[in-house]
Image (cartoon, rainbow, N blue to C red; front, side, top):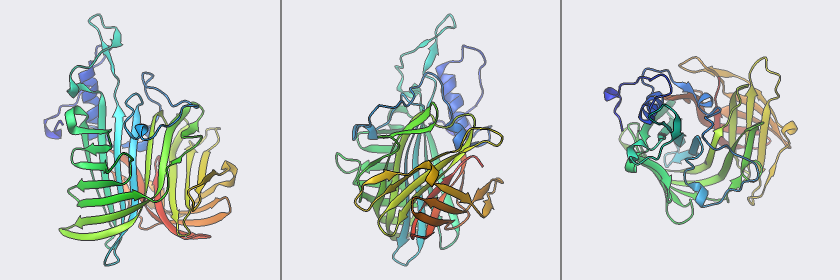
Length: 380
C-alpha cells in the first residue's frame, strides 16, 4: 500500500479525472491525509449511481454471501465481544473489516464516461480498512489501532473463508463461516481467538433485507452468540481469555438518507440465554420525517421475532464528551417487548477516533434482565 509519508493527495477537476486519481483521492480520504476524520454515518450515506442498491425480494445465500459484494458501495464484517482472563480481569473487543467501493467508470479519449475494464490488479477499485480495539476495564484504557489498504494482489479481501487485511484475519476452519480463528498482530497488542457459534445465523429485517428509510436499505445478517477462547497479549503479558461475542455482516450502497443524522445500535446478550438487538436511526433536528426503529428478540432455542417499532422506547441519559467534543450518551433506558432495561457503558472512554469518528463500546445490562453487550453510536 501507499505509505502516508510518500503519498501526495490532490484532486483533479473536470470529467477527465482518471480512475487512478479517484483511487488515490479515496485512499487519501480513508488515510486521513490532509482531511479531517469523517463521521462513520456520513461515509455510509447515499452512494454513486453506478453501485447496486439493496432491493426487497432478494435472498441471502450462505455460505456464498459471506464473501465480498464489490457491486455494492460499502460492506463490513464486524465482531465484538466481552472477554475475561484467568485473573478475572475483563475486556471489551472490537474487530471490523470495512470495504469501500470507488467509482469504477473510466473516461475515453474524447472525455466521455465509459466502463473501463481493469487489467491492472493494483487498480481494483476497492479500498479496505481494518479496525481493532481493546477496552481494558481493569485499567480504564481504550486501545485502538487500524490499517488501510488498496485491495491489490493479496493485500486485503473477503473470500473463500478468509476475511483479512494483511495479517489481521478471520479465517474459517471449514466450509461454514464458523468455527474460525481471529488473529490480530497490532501495535496495541496481539489477539488469537478461536470463534464458534452457539446459535444459528439470524437474517435481519425481512429475510435479510434491512430497510433504513424509503429507498435506503442493506442486506444484513448476524450470529448473535459466539464462544470466544484464546489469548490476548497486552504490554508483553499474554493472558488466556474467554467470553462471548457477536458477529455482523452487512452490505449496502445507501444506508442513511440525507435527513437522517446517525444511529444508536445495541447488541445485547442476556444472562437468561436470549439476545436483543435494536437500533434507531435519528432524524435531523427540524425535519418532519419519523425516527426509524428496529428490534429483534432471539430466544434461547435460536428462534426470533421482530418487535413492533412502537414497542421500542430508547431514552438517553448521562452523556460523556469525547476527546473531539462529541456528547455521547453512555446510559440508556430501554423498553422493548416485555423488557425494561438499563444500559450502561462499562467505561465511558470507548470512542473511536481514527479515520471515522464514532463510539463503540462494551455495555452492561440491568433491570428486567442482566447481561452484557455492545453499543455503537454515530452522528453526534
